[in-house]
Image: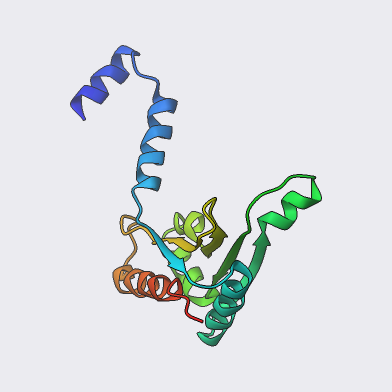
Length: 153
């Protein structure tokens, strides 16, 4: 840290670049979970939507990237992102620390890769955002995300 401050004082250091790199390092340090599925993208989306709703969660949006690509004359593999959450829990987290507004709502992507394999992917909530009494909530949410990507027929 002393070296960074010295470089800043000397004007040798690009602070905006440093801040961007620091943010990207923290962002991508979060654990990404992937699970290979034995069903199609469409079937997995239907199963996941049902699972999310059965847990009393709200689905805010379902984004079909392949369909959006078709609309502009482009091709891509199937890829759907489901954006969901619990407004009561999310609002409490954001009221405790507004930095949660970047992390919420939750997202799970279902996609087919270039080898034809279908995957469910999500990113766990970070544990470094200071939140009073938030550790239990974050652990519960991360446990839920781990279960949701285990999509079965």
